[in-house]
Length: 247
Image 1 (cartoon, rainbow, N blue to C red):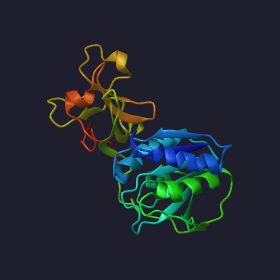
Image 2: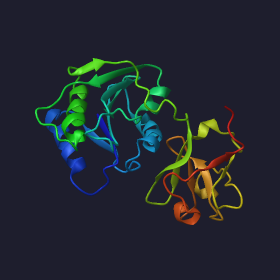
Image 3: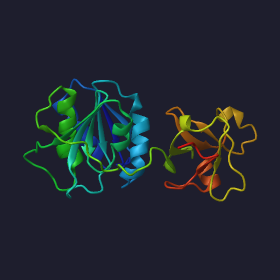
Image 4: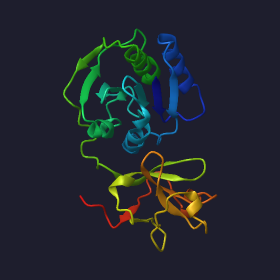
């Protein structure tokens, strides 16, 4: 299948136009939206979310990842094959965490260009057709390149909020497996760090907590209320594990 990750949001026709291109080019391939609500204009924080969300992909799948504030500029167009899953999108660091955590990585420049390439919508005109072709096993139009290092100086885990869902739960870019079982989480403005709980039901007093979410990330929540509103959290809000993980 093709899994789509973007910051397009729920309004406008952007997602629909990309999906239409892929369905027309590869009607036998399912197209599934992972999210259209990645951090807007923000490949840096989106990279940590993409690495977690795309773990559901299986060998042969294609992940179309488009968070592309530099569209039409000098950034390259890439197809990265990481552990037999293809990632298609801009060369702006968005796939760096995925590649860094994979056992086997191959990187290709997308040299194919359509007859009509808009200046502002490479997601539809360049990346979507490439994703559809790869899902059908067609690799024409790709040229091997040395591993790209946009994002090479980004940390392995990011102690910031990278996503807030409609319930007000706030995901970070930190993998929970990197923290001790008794680690606490310091949040700006709170007098005391948040304790770790297993799940929402354990927050009996609804005071707020952090837990390992279903994608393996550290997430801040409060039972039956918005942790983002209660603790004044936004995309980019820093958090600090206590104690700090070993490096």
